[in-house]
Length: 130
Image 1: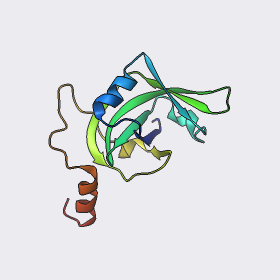
Image 2: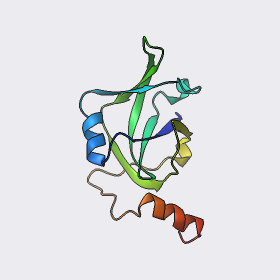
Image 3: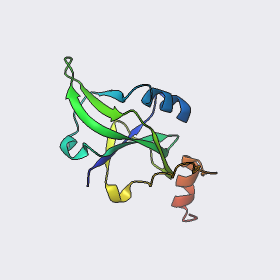
């Protein structure tokens, strides 16, 4: 099973802005400073996007390419797939995500519903209420 990663969608203020960027072409290209150590395991996996402390969607990772400036490009499939919202603490850069811990994709036409906002979900979880 491929390895996944999580990343905060810090330049996108809404889900629709993220969707427009990802789906602007057949591939979305994301620049990163460092190549993940486990990058070979991640091809075919997904990059899970975090917005407001919640994993909201994913894109398939197609590959990694080094840029002339020494940085790296992560090639992503140009399709944003909504997933079941799941609380995720903020972090810098990316974090690895095992397949067994990844949220499920939402079915075609399925809505996330009235998901609890990420921060509130985290607090309720700490209190043992959910």
